[in-house]
Length: 556
Image 1 (cartoon, rainbow, N blue to C red):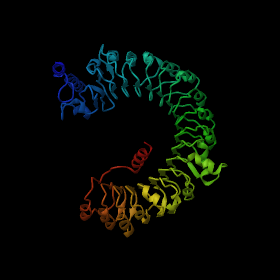
Image 2 (tube, one colour):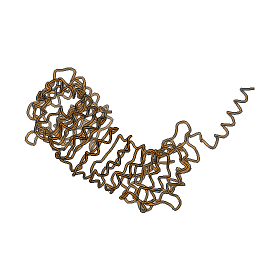
Image 3 (cartoon, rainbow, N blue to C red):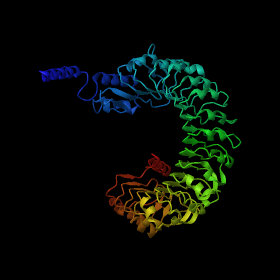
Image 4 (cartoon, helix red, strand yellow):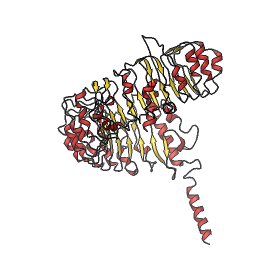
């Protein structure tokens, strides 16, 4: 009897579900609502919308849509408006009301106004909505944004680059007590916006980059944001000082201050009092060397960006961190000639050098470091990524100088005047090095590098030799030993027929990029590429994009 009741209940439930949740894994009413949205937007340039309903009826598989795996209801929805000049796009809240389990709604580049009586307050019934993105939507009547304050469930709100100017533009948002992430970047706010932000007690992330902030007088008002962990104040104009307020943010983990017109005369010492700081970006300002000792107390700092900030000659790099947490250090685009502490110039000797023992990423590109700098890196035993592009390296480079870097995976020496690279005999380096960049290695305007080292690195997977000129048997002979190379980049290079034909002997090669290659492509050579997935004669990756891809893989 009990079993019969259970079967009857199951049949009732099944009958209720029939017509409500289709066998295609998508609710019929929500599929129809999405098709209505598609028709209302009617943008031929939006390829994501145009694909809706074409290949499958299951709207959960449509582009930029995510469904709850349990209920089958739409939970995340993104609609892009392609093109900068939207002249007839009006927000109509009723079109979104069928999505009762919507948690995330992203409408970047979207609207200029609202349909009458169909403003954002109508979305109040979507009580699970936590994320709303209106990035770069230029509303004719900016006051309608105040109606967003009715969406009490919101935790994340992006109003970046939408032309906001004054406190009155966002007054209605004060009711969003659960808001944790607020992006107001790219607007025209001045200092008066700061006190009004204290009404968000749950705020963890605040982005005010690219505004018109100038003074820190009112920043004390943010001291009530006790949960704030992320703060971006980049690209404002705090040229009269910025750091007095920093002491109030003990919970801060990430701080962006780049490109604010700050100089070495600015009191930066209070930044070092942010004891829990893990990420700090001070790039694109002319500090000079004098401010380096100010950061010794940042013992938890993991990522430090000091690119293009006026560092010159010898720098005492041990003063950048007082602990062993630092993993990522970017010193690119300065005029550094030597790294003092690495060469034993610091007072603490080996004990001081241990502070950087966990460093994994080091970018020293676009400085003035010579060949002697290679040996000064020996103590960085955890290093996985090293970029020394466009320095003053020249002539013969002995890779034995890097033997101590047994964990090195990615190395870039491009843009230097190197004529020969002698391989390391340390098998640890040979085993771990997976990507080597020797792009634009020139002497007197012409490449003449000898690639004898390549045969010593049989486990390389990525080899980039763009903007070079290769001739003779060495290149062809050594490439044949690279049995593990999967990606080879020869963009803007030239090579003779013998060297080109040898590429077909690379058994693991599946990506070959030869954009603007200066060579005659022999038919026989092309026929030997049996395992190629990509043969690109236009463009595949730039060397910089490749570097970024590899260091992101390492850090994440």
